[in-house]
Image (cartoon, rainbow, N blue to C red; front, side, top):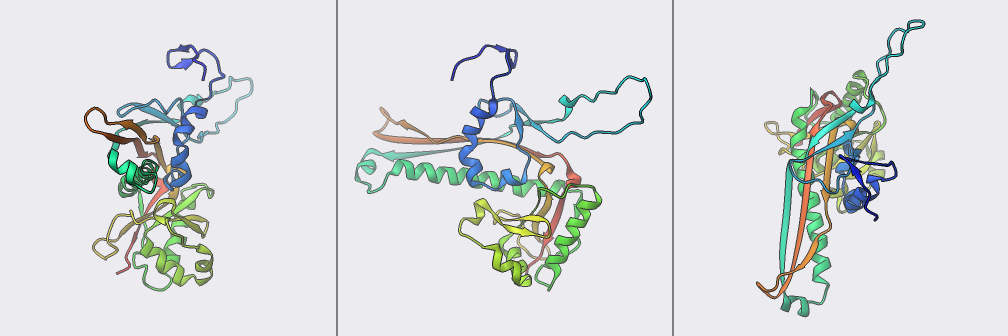
Length: 291
């Protein structure tokens, strides 16, 4: 890629597309994870070169306020540069694996690629766990139905969540619910027709999407906090994609030589992450009791 002269943090022309380079870094993550499907990750600027403690900006849909029009008066221009969210990259995770030279030669599979895939899975899971077990506390509304094992309660809880979001004028597109697998079990039992089409698959803990219900994209994750009991219900959530801003890079695992310290290959992977709830009224806490 040709180096282009920069003016401050910007380029002197408008032909550089940061998405072309940043999204190459994010490609593997977006292909295999559910978190980008329930968060706003429409970053501006270059994300690939950001590090922990730095700030990135997430675009959000502009909020326009219509004012009374006066004939022959100047137009009140709204500055759309303000329609962005400043987000600090304040989480950093790493893994490092050492493969001895003898193991590389004796193994009947490609240990390097095997470890790279395992590292990607580990980083994807820690991103899921970090976000899912934190953001529910910022929701402004709590659902009223917790006993999901009671007949029809799960359907009522989801319908109530949809009505609450509609009352708050939250758009109907890109709404989602995130529940624990034990909650999904009762939901599919109650709604037999939907159960036939929900299609539980292996690997749901990462991709999570099992179908649609009552206008929501339904995601399932074992990382939903809680135990499903009356005293500690599952911290399930419902919301809109714009409620949570998220920026992350899970870089491809780097393969390096460990010589001269020891013979063999080292594999290193790093993840930088930042997130926050930016629209708390578009996020509902849905406690789920299944025991």
